[in-house]
Image (cartoon, rainbow, N blue to C red):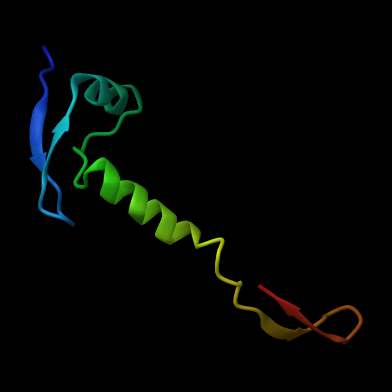
Length: 75
């Protein structure tokens, strides 16, 4: 089966993007069966949002230590 570049539409921004033969080969080598639903820019944005932002402080929670019984904070 010969692979050819495919034009897909991003589900987030609605822009068309090219799913190249190289990307298709990568997907096949990893056993991925579904085509990407997002363009590379939207994938990168989504990845950053999931990982959290480094410019914002982490939300901390107060907990009681199970060993010593002292109150402390954890992310």
